[in-house]
Figure (cartoon, rainbow, N blue to C red):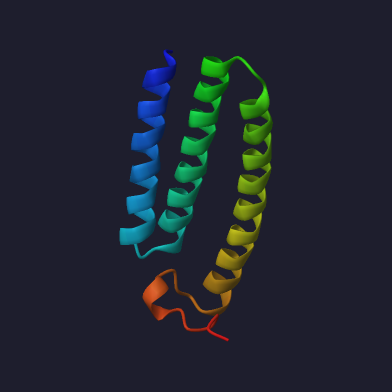
Length: 99
């Protein structure tokens, strides 16, 4: 695929994830929005690697994938705890993490 098309697809994917994060109340959909934004960043780094012919973008893709895996593990652990103890998935009712 052409690098310009990859960048445009990454931009569209990023904004879809951003609006999913902003406008959805369910925690699962918010986490999906974050994952979409991270995958859009990976797509743009892959396109940059193809344009500039160096491996810097591939190194960043590796680190973003590691961050996404950690975010998914911690987020899903919190989600399981909230669903077992509070029986809620809506962010409007979450006051437990306010400190």
